[in-house]
Image 1: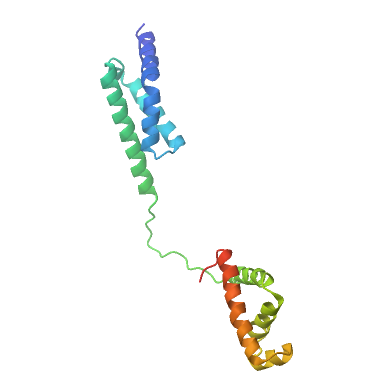
Image 2 (image 1 turned 90 degrees about the horizontal axis):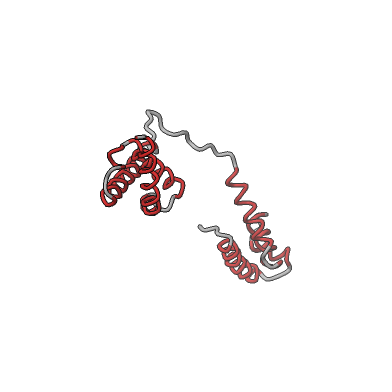
Length: 170
């Protein structure tokens, strides 16, 4: 008979306080619904194990539930923060230069070059990638040296803008 009475009290406790307890647990966990569910479940489990809580009046039962939920959330936060630290007697491994960063940069620059005008692209390719001097690039393109210089200037500005649009910064 005692178990039936405790079950009825537990149902009443759940019906009266679960919505408020859920909202409070959601606040305690910064909106993490899964952690809030765990907090509510553990709180109600502790209430079920502690029959003295079941016999309390509505106000003190809610206060007890909220206090337990808060402690569970704090304990969870503390244990999670304690687990995130790694103590070791060895320094972390050093990065190995495998050329991946250089390849990605090359792809980004190639894609950005493809968006430039043909005149800007050809002057950059000649001067920066093929190593031609301004005089040699001018002879190859059939333009004055000053034209190569100004095209190079404006081509680099345009290239910078294209790269910035893609999220590449200096």
